[in-house]
Amino acid sequence: MSNRRDFMGMALGSFAALGALGALYAAKRTWDPLPSVKSAGFTTIDLSPAQENVLVTEKWRGKPIFILKQPANAPKSDREIHVAGGRYLVVVGLCTHLGCIPAYLADKKQFKCACHGGEFDSLGVNTFGPPPRPLDIPPFKISGTSVILGETGPEYEKMLAAGLTLKV
Amino acid sequence: MAHFDEKAKPFSHKWLNERMAVDTVKKVLSTEYWIPKDINFLWAMGMILAATFGLLIISGIFLLMYYQPSVSGAFDSVNHTIMSEVGFGWLWRHIHGVAASVVFLVIYIHMFTGIYYGSYKRGREMIWLSGMLLFVLFSAEAFSGYMLPWGQMSYWAGMVITNLFEGFSPTIAGGVANFPGFVEWLRGDYVPGQAFLTRFFMLHVFLLPLVIIAVIVLHFATLRIPHVNNQHGKEIDFDEAAKLYKEGKKKESKVIPFNPVFLSKDIFVMGVYFILFFYLVFFHFDFAMDPVNFDPADGLKTPAHIYPEWYFLWSYEILRPFNKDLGLIAFGFAQVAFFLLPFLDKSPVVAPANKRGLFKVWFWVMIVDMIVLTVMGKLPPEGIWTIIGLIAALVFIALFVALPFITKFEKKA
Image (cartoon, rainbow over the protein chains, first blue to last red):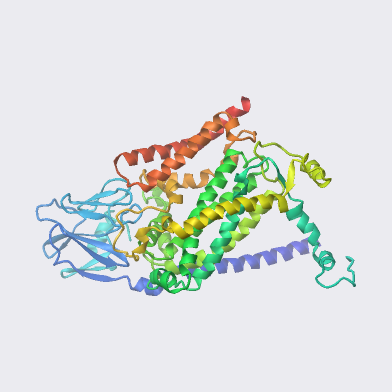
């Protein structure tokens, strides 16, 4: 008798567990970003109008993108993008601590986040406070004087391989 | 089979009693649910919370009729439609906003009363744990509700809090505790957007209230057998005290019935509370309405200084003075510390804190530290404030680490 009962219990339990797993998967997929949200994630930005040490803010995937043309006499860095003779910093303008937008102080050549006091230099490298890493570099592909954000070109692949940025 | 009197009139007392044992239910839950006499007004906080939660539901229902959960329409549906078009829409909004803030004040009083009188141990552990669960659920409810007006504070609070779920830095332990994709999954977008607003709207108006109501029922149930504590932590023989009361020796008995005696006292305290509450609703609602949230959400502009509502400031300040990973650990610690109280307190003594030696010091240092953390959380992260905040955060952690030793020492004394 008890074996029969065990079998019934296990059969019911297995089918219920299977159903629950299926439902959980469906629930997880429902919470995923929509295809329309994902496919809208490409933006082309022309870098040539940017002026030295003046911050330009653009938008990509709803996030602010900082473009900062480096002065000609500034020290060279692997984090720059070279386009038509100019050297540009192109980063996601969200503090790597908890995602506030840092302000650029042009006279100090420094980014400062008001939320928790984090600071970054003009190359987006964290210099003070809670931020755990430099400002992230978005995936980019160089096309003439422009960058296409969301696509990955060889320059970006190189930066990623060198560990200069996280994948965002 | 049970006996049913065929002559009983439908829905008469007898008819209902035979079918649903209404007399027994009433006795168990109300007229013979015994409450000690040795209590004070702080024992009314539970019913005040229940009443405030009721007000939140009623005002929320009216707001729900005009609120529009869309990134383009939410701000105007709150600040224009509800505030200036809907008849008395302002009343519901101000009741909802003030109640959301005040409910946390009463929750904290309720919590600290429990800690002061030792009402979390020796049979009352489940009361404490279900209560702490309610605190977490109310926090989630408050946060999700804060998203809905879709102002600057809504957006940036949403950004910062969901980013916490990214976990630790990828450099820690090979990145096992780093989940960058989880944040986007939670939001349904790269940044808080339409998907984010609609899902938090669903959580705020349906799922979380449903769970809260269920846990309130559980909280009441955990209280029924151990009974409420009393001012001196005395163990009361409830059977004997109840017998005296029922024999008419009400003066000699140490207890009163929940209904109508205790409830009538509760309702008096509630009356005083509601005078203060509606004074705030009609004349000082602005304290619960952050001016920054009257700017519509803008993903390209962080407000100069962002901070949470006052009731989250202490745990926010525990996160703030550290680097990201340490901050996350400290913040996690702050969230679970109070849950562990019944197990960290190693003393079997149930008594007011002021009669418990070192625990008295522990209690008051904890209260002062929570206040310091709250004040520092509101100030900008600069200079001396950062240092005071760091010390207060370290004191908070040290307090909970020290508690088992302090209370063990008390046992010997």
